[in-house]
Amino acid sequence: MASATRLRRLGAAAAAIAAASGGALLFNQPAFSSSDRGGGGGSAITAVRQKIADPTAAVPPRKVQESALIGASSASPLDVLVIGGGATGSGVALDAVTRGLRVGLVEREDFSSGTSSRSTKLIHGGVRYLEKAVFNFDYGQLKLVFHALEERKQVIENAPHLCHALPCMTPCFDWFEVVYYWIGLKMYDLVAGARLLHLSRYYSAQESVELFPTLARKGKDRSLKGTVVYYDGQMNDSRLNVGLACTAALAGAAVLNHAEVVSFLKDEASDRVIGARIRDNLTGQEFDTYAKVVVNAAGPFCDSVRKMADKEARPMICPSSGVHIVLPDYYSPEGMGLIVPKTKDGRVVFMLPWLGRTVAGTTDSNTTITLLPEPHEDEIQFILDAICDYLNVKVRRADVLSAWSGIRPLATDPSAKNTESISRDHVVCEDYPGLVTITGGKWTTYRSMAEDAVDAAIKSGKLSPTNECLTQKLHIVGGEGWNPAFFTVLAQQYIRMKKSYRGKVVPGVMDTALAKHLSHAYGSKAEQVASIAQNENLGKRLAHGYPFLEAEVAYCARNEYCESAVDFIARRSRLAFLDTDAASRALPRVIEILATEHKWDKSRKKQEVEKAKQFLETFKSSKNAQFYDGKH
Image (cartoon, rainbow, N blue to C red; front, top):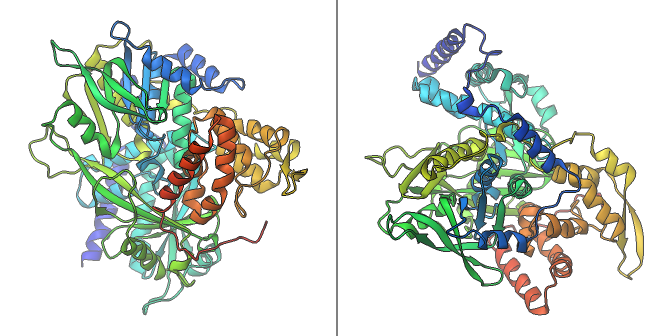
C-alpha cells in the first residue's frame, strides 16, 4: 500500500512539474533576472578573461601579496578582506575582485586544507532534494533542485579540465525499485531540462554486470532485476579550489595562504570591524591590514572567528563528520559509479572511480571541530559493509589505500528564534558590524554562495563595484581554450628528461596516461609543466604506479603558492588521498625539490618531514595495503 502511494505521488508530481511549465520544462528554464545572476559588464569580463588566459601571466609572488595586505592602511583600506581559503572563501575573493573591488584573502593553513579537499568529489544536482520535494510537497526543496542544477552546469563549464559528467548506477533488487527509481530519475531529467548532463536510463541485469563487472547479481535471498543510471558531475576538488585562489590572484586579489587572523581591528567610535591583525605562519611576522568589510568564510571554524569579534556570539555551526575511503581501481570500472541507496543509518553511500582509484563514502555523524580530523575505524568498516552487499568481489580492510574525514559545516541562522532547522543550504549574516559570515551550503553551490556574500559585503560597506557579478561565465585558470583532446599535444610534442639512480640523464616517453593527467590537472597550463619536465630534468615519476611528476612540484611552488610538502602531496597533487603509503615514499623527493625552489635550510627540511608524517598518520590506510597496477 505504501509503495503504491509513493508511486502515485511520483506520477502526480511529474504531471504537476510538467504542467507548471506548460509541458515544456525540458526546454524552458526558470528565468533569472540580471540582478539574480549578473548582467552587463561585457567589457569588464573580456578584460578579466584576457588577464586570466594570458599564457605569459603568472601569479604575483607571495612576498608581493603580503606587501599588498600590509599596504592596506586605515587611510587606504581594502574593500573586502576574506578569512578562509576554502571553496567559498576563494570564490568570494574571485567574485569581489572581478567586480572591480580591492580584495585580500588570508587562509590559516592552505587553500582547500579543510572541508573543501575532503568531499565526495561529486558536483551534485540535488536529486535527493527532488525526492523530498515530491513526498513533502515542498516547493522550497524544488527550488533547491533548480539552483543546484544551474550551479552544477556552471561549475563544469567554468573548469572543464577538472570536472566531468559521471554516470551513477543504482542497483534494483525488486521490480518496484526499478519502477520507483526510473520514474524518479525521469522526473529529474525533466526538471534539469537544458542543464541535463545526459538522460538517465534503465539497464537489464545482464547489461548492468557487463558495465559494472564487480556488481553482485545475487545476495541475501535476492536477485538483481536491473539498474537505473543517472548522471552527476565529478571534480578534483582541491585542484579546483587552488585554481579559484590562483584565478583571483591573477585578477588582482592579494591572496595569502599560511596566514592567520589573530584578532580584529575595531573602530573605537562605532565598534565596527575595520580590519585584522594577521600572523604569517611561515615567518612568524605579524601585521595589520584594514578593510571596509571582512567576510568570514572559515567553514567549520567560522564560529571561532565570530567569537573573536564578539565573545557572546551564538554558535551557528553543527559539525558533521564525513568519512571516505580509497580502494584499488578494480572495485569499480572506469567511468561508472555505484550508489547504495539505503544503508543502516539511512544515508546514501557512493562508490566512484576517481583519478585511477575508487573512492567510497560517506558517513554522517556528529563530531568535534578539529584542524586534522581523523576517521574512526567503525566508520571505515561501516562503508566497507555498505558496499559489500552489492559486490561480488571480496571487500577487505587490507585494500584501503587511504581514508580521511572531513567536517561539514551544517549551519543554523543565529538570528533565528529556534534551531530546529539545520540547513544544508547556506546562511549569510552580519551579526557584528563589519563582519559578514557565509557558511553552510555545499561545493556545488560555492559560486552562488560567494555571490550572495559579496552582495552582503557591498551593502554592509556601502562599496562601489564597477560592474555586476561576472563569475557565472568565467573560466578558472587553465580552463580557457582547453578541450578534451589537449593531452595529444603533450604526448606528441614533449619528452620527459629524468635522472637515473646513477645521476645520468635519460629521456622518457610522455605516454598517454601522463599526458592525460597533466592535461586534466593543469588544463591549458599543462604545457608549462611538461616544459619543466623536459628542460629541467624533472621528468621522473614521484611514486610507482601514479602519474605525478617531479616537474609538478617545481611548477606548483612557482605558480600555485605551494609552500610546504603537505601542500603538494595533499592538495596540488592528490597522492595522500589516493595512497598514503605512496605519498610517504614520494615525500623525500618532494621536499628536496621544494627546498631548491624555496631555499630551505636543513632545519626547515627536517621540520617538513615531521609535519608531513604527522599529517599522513591521520589518513587511516591499511598498513599492509601495497597496491601496484602492474603497468610501470
